Amino acid sequence: MASAAASNAAHSVKAAVVGFIGLGNMGACMAANVLRHNYPLAVFDRNEAAMDSLVQQGAQPADSPADLATKVDVIITMLPTPAIVLDVYTGPSGVLTATTTTRSPPSSSATPTPQSPPSAAPPLPSSSSIRPHLLIDASTVDPATCHAIAAAAQACAVAPSALHSLHGPPLVVDAPVSGGVGGAKAGTLTFMVGGTSEAFSQAAPLLAAMGSRSVHCGPTGSGAAAKLCNNLALAIQMASVSEALALGQRLGLSPALLSAIFNSSSAKCWSSEVYNPAPGVMAGVPSARHYQGGFSNALMVRGDATLWVDLVKVLSTGVLRILYRPTLSKDLGLAVAAARAAGAPVPLGENVMGMYSDMVSKGAAGDDFSSIYKHSYGGEPVEV
Figure 1 (cartoon, rainbow, N blue to C red):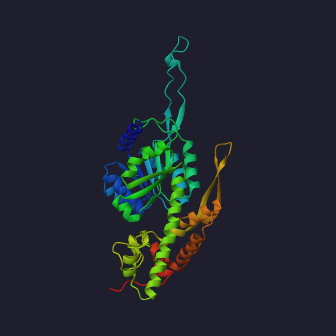
Figure 2: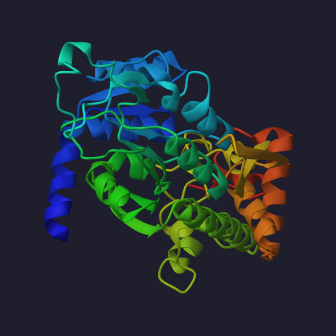
Figure 3: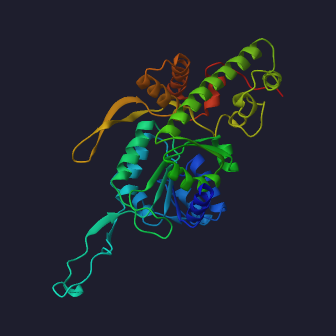
């Protein structure tokens, strides 16, 4: 039964028109891989140049998230902040506002009588529905934002389609990624997925077009929680590798030599082996191009208003009560904020977040996060 369900899900998604919103460094590569797997694709981004690049590859452009939602069966979003994610789904021109009016089919038990001929029957009741039956948010957000999107989707109904048998709200998954721009280009991303088993099953074939591994972490918000924990560890790891390489350099050791030792010893890790922060050690990484074209320091700690949702109390009107608390809104900032809310101590995370915040305030916001080697530790390029 399980394999049959998976096969049906794969067939359903493979026949779907896919919409992609958010064509930045990551999203553009992911959307291109969707096209390469022969999915019909529509795209939206506020940056028209980013859209034009995908249109030249065969995608159809959309004028807004709502416009895109009228053209597609599945939506993937890859956006920079929780506030933008919320606006794309629930804002005035959001995905969940793209409703169409459909007439409900007559009841099978309703039969005409002499007193009530078919021509004299009352009008059929109408309802608002949306076309997309599956919503995949691959953005890095806090779990509360995932719950807010899922709750908003619960108020919508999916329009009937041969692609699915849903009779209620769309399926929603949070599916943040790990693997960076390189993984997005190569289609080797790891997806950390939160949502129901049915939603994960429906999303899996499409995630496989963009990545090499998808892990179902649990219910809504679990994927986001896993991503925040991963990025907390990554930020600390990058700082520790940078600290050790810069120290070694001052002790007379080449960062290239020391990295080779790390990578065959107990210090081996992603930051030393795959994304080395010392210029001259590796080709094809941001440190080899003046720390450009990667994951910026600003995205690590950019300040914003993070969305916090009261998941227990929903107003009697059905409107989800949303509370805003000022905090840092991206990746490391989100992880530290989540830790504080959970009462979990993260002293290393807080210290490293302070270092990234300092780099941003001193003008290095656009540099890749591996530039902590240069800006915080004074590390120098490898001499050739």
